[in-house]
Each structure stands twice: as C-alpha cells, then as structure tokens.
Image 1: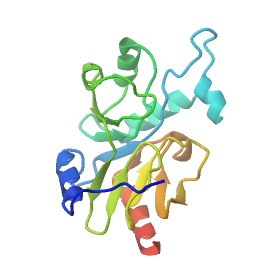
Image 2 (image 1 turned 90 degrees about the horizontal axis):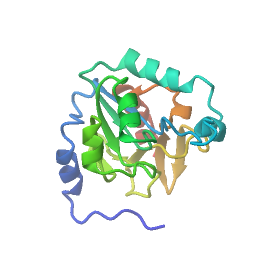
Image 3 (image 1 turned 90 degrees about the vertical axis):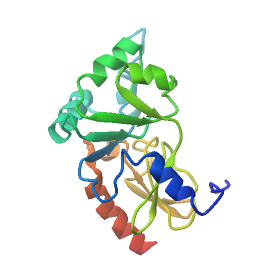
Length: 204
C-alpha cells in the first residue's frame, strides 16, 4: 500500500490551519477524542443490538458512553469523533446528539454517509478527510482507519474496534486505536493522549 503523499513542505501547516479551531496545540486541555460509537446500530426488524454482538459490548454500553462523555466534557468543550457516530434517521441521530455535551466534530467514517449539511442540521460539524496536526515534537495524523503515512508521523484512529490493541505498529508507524472498546467507553482528554504519543515519539 502506498504512503500518503504531501504535495509540498507546507502541507502539514496548511492542514493545521484548516482545523485550528479544534486544535490549538498549546491549549489542548479542553479537547476530547473518541471513535466508533455506532449509536443505533440495530437490526431494524428484530431490534437486536448488532454492534454489541459484533464487538462483544456490554448490555449498557450506550449508557456508559453517554454518562462518561458528559461527566468529562462540558457544553463548551470540543469532542473530536473519529468516525461511525450513529445510524438512523436525522431525528434518531439528533436524539443521540442532544444527549451529549460539547461541540462535536465528526471525521467521516465508512458508516457516516450523510452530507455536511445533514450533520449540521443535527448539531455536528463533519470533517470529510483525514487531517494532520503538527505539534512541537511530531505530526499527528487523525483518520478513521489506520492509514500509511510519512515516517515519524504518529496516527490516531478508530475503525478496528476490538480487533487491534490500543497501541500498534503498522505500516512502519505507531497508531493509537481510540475505538470505544479500547478506551472503556470513555472519551480521552487529548492532553492525556498526547503524553502517550510523546512516549511513542521517543521509541520510533
């Protein structure tokens, strides 16, 4: 698989400026990250909770996510969701969103099939493509699934659920899997996650 190519040396800075409202790398204490909640991922005929069966989630996983989310994030905090937020109609998705604190930015996952306007209507800002944040120490690639990337770029992603561990080395780079199954159904404060990335930076 080919590595992601960047057209010029300023690409990291360009991507950072596009999302500066999410990440001021010097003021990251109020940003939380999470991925792959899959709210409303049910069998529409039987009502079975498909995602719980597929991924071995506890019966009360939805309540755990909502309670943990609101315990940590205030209405003014930013929550960056790395894809596969919820299934269902606009009303069903809005009913989930209105239970959650914070300003939600959703990086488009393989199940997030609606438009930017559709998500705006339910109170979520959709980000359509992976992006890079350039910190003092290293660039960080945010994506839904693990992506090949340039050397010394550390990745944060979801998609794999319980299938790969919290930290893995793939395509020659370290990646952190923040699918809810890996983070105890609790959003992670990015400041705390950054400390883990710093440790990995000195390993790479």
